[in-house]
Image (cartoon, rainbow, N blue to C red; front, side, top):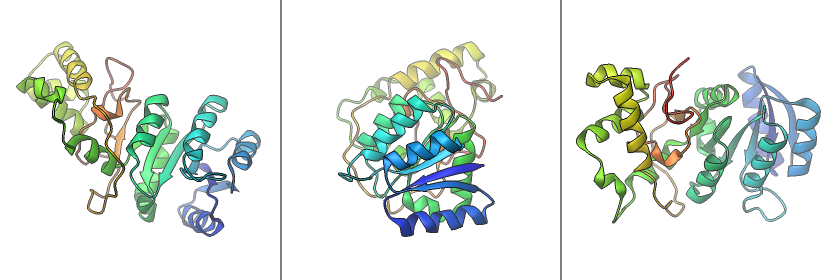
Length: 243
């Protein structure tokens, strides 16, 4: 695994680089600005770029813009965006635009090297990594007129099993349904779970493991629940299966 780091704080970059090196992950470059990172990626082509969402010159959403540029110019390079706080609007913009090789995690997650390495592996493999704090916020916020209220009992069961990481085949076996029925039901459940993103907040008591999805067209369709390592939800619409 080869990664490039982008953070305007040299101390944080070097600290993360040491942690990654101890996990036998090669850090090909450390950059303090978006231009420096793009130049390094063009020359070295790492597997994943780890990018702080707040970069110079305005320290607002430069990291988000940089992630989009990386996906356009170097589609084979994954991007893991790090944020100090849950910023749902930025996260959803990132995940709605880029449905593969993409991740969004709170900086607190990188303190657990197992979670960090697992996220990098899955992003490099083409999957999407979503911080559980973001998933929890999307699911648990107040929704006066949520379309989730219109779901049938069966659709809710399918959606819940999707959150556990079951594939369509696994859901069919659990609920004694045909794969075709699960495919139709899961498509309806996912389309009904979209809603307006909430305001940013912190996440002091969220689950410790990131939620992993594979090329999900709508990250809001994922419901909270600690996903198994290697688990998959819906991918290229309308069906996703484990390889």
